Image (cartoon, rainbow, N blue to C red):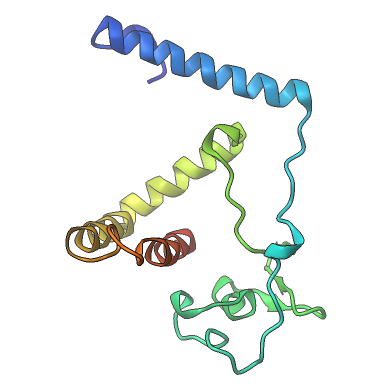
Length: 160
């Protein structure tokens, strides 16, 4: 909500104002401390794999287990050090998640635009339905399968 004065109740207005103040404080703290966010640590870099290992060749990006396998799906080319070079010259690297409040304004806008595209395409609804079905009847929400299932789900979500 951009304008807290439009809140339906005094309590909702108070919550709105508090959240806006927290957001301003976190952004101010980022600019005053000149914090540079770390790049992914070395241990998150892909390990060398046997060329015939699982996930090296795929007909769909969901089947990939390595960046080398993903590269063609992003119209990239493999560079001399086995890195994926995208058409704009950037390297395709492993995902690095940031806490939402630590996103810059530009990153937030890009996130919201990406979510809007997912919603318009119907992919967001399809994935939400898939998550709902698994949450109702399997161990994806109540057992040892929670972490691996959600890791794969988020991988697929990030590809979109």
